[in-house]
Length: 164
Image 1 (spheres, one colour):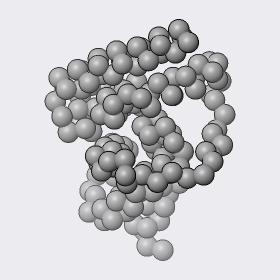
Image 2 (cartoon, one colour; image 1 turned 60 degrees about the vertical axis):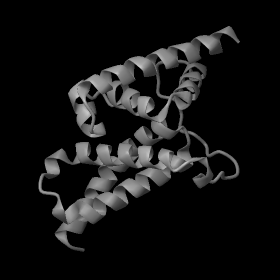
Image 3 (cartoon, rainbow, N blue to C red; image 1 turned 30 degrees about the horizontal axis):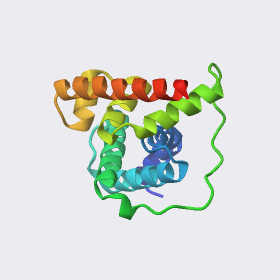
Image 4 (cartoon, rainbow, N blue to C red; image 1 turned 180 degrees about the vertical axis):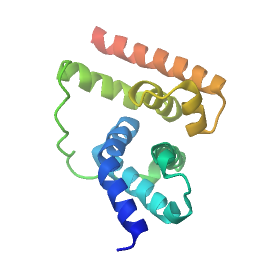
C-alpha cells in the first residue's frame, strides 16, 4: 500500500462515522446516508493525490458530502429506490428524550434540502456563517436567509406535532 493510500485509509477510518452522522441528518435515512458517505469518499479518493492541503480535509470532505446530497436531490424522486425494512438506528445520545429527538429528526427531514443543509452545517456541525457559505458556494446573506427560513419551517413543523 502506498503512503497516499495509507493516508486516505487512515483519514477514512477517522472521519467516516462523523460524516455518516451528518449525512443522516441531511437525508433522514441510514441507508442513503451510507450511500452518500460512500459516494463522498469515492470522490475524495479520486482527488486525493491532487489535494495539497490535507489540514483542510474535513472542510473539503464536508463540502463534497453536501454537494453530493444536493445533487442527488435534484435528480428527482424516480431515482430513489426504496429498500425493505429500515435499519436499526444507533441509540440517542444522552441528554434529551428519545421521543423529542425522533420528532426533531422527522421535522428536519421535511425541511427543504438546501435549508436542511444550512441548518445541519450551522447548528449541528457548528460552522460559522462564512464557513457554511463557503461550503455551499453561496453568499453569507443566502446562508442567513436559508437558516432563518429553515428554522421557521422547523419551528412550525414542531408546533404542528405538539398540537397532535
